[in-house]
Image (cartoon, rainbow over all chains, first blue to last red; front, side, top):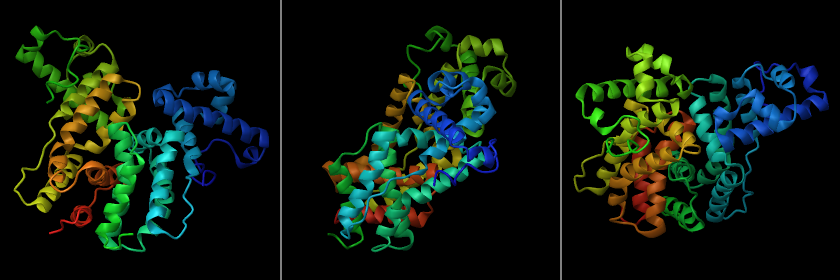
Length: 199
Length: 199
């Protein structure tokens, strides 16, 4: 997904150049650093001079690939594209818990929560980031909604999808902590009991 | 609450000056503009020159009150302090729906969702904003947790509080839309049915 989202018409590098593996490696190296800096130091720290120092590439190279900081930030977010999913086993309860645990793992390992907070903020003023956010959300919720659609539909399905994703996002962003296994299991059990399926 | 949170030791204006109603009005005027700009244009737009233009106060006045942009942003968030709550009627289901509807109303009227996204991002690098966020969250969830504690406890109570707040936050930040009445009612009904209380 990373290669198909947010990498479109506004990208300054022509397709012929991007096919060059060295150019592709440079882009990827710098964007990986940009995403790390964004998450660790906040987005104000994503500047060409700082990324040049950290990545080891020249400022000229960075300006050549990304004329503005906005281009850098936008393209860095395309690295978020690969959302990891739980592989369903057929047991609804454990599959839902597994999928939510993968969402939590993305926050633990990659600080996905911080990236999502910045993305939500920037999408207000950058329409192409709104598109990227929409793609990430659709991909991110796909497995969860498939699982829930076995027992819920309509407003209940929508509510359950928002509640389960939202419990983890809200905990990370607003409480600055991730829910433990017991709380994740309780979110799933409340939804399943509410849907009158249970275990 | 706004007067007790984030208005502490780092504020440059001494208490004697703040007691002056003109000074208090100036501070409030500028911070209101700062919060509006933050929400409407993004936080990069919160600069002394821009706020001076929009608020009608001189740059010198603004620099005198807030030496840095960080001070401006931090103090602007203190205006978020007054979280509006539903007044409980005694009917648990309608009280929960009423409280969630107030949370949604804050996002509709005051773009609380955008403010929370910026706050979550900035709290990573500004510890005093983390304190402010914690106060806002405790105050914001107080009524909801009181209501839920009548039928749930332990991990189930924690899960339900995160799910109900999270459904609205996640919808606003990640889907860029607010849940309608039917979806809000469905979130409450799932939790209440899951808690084996129902109607």
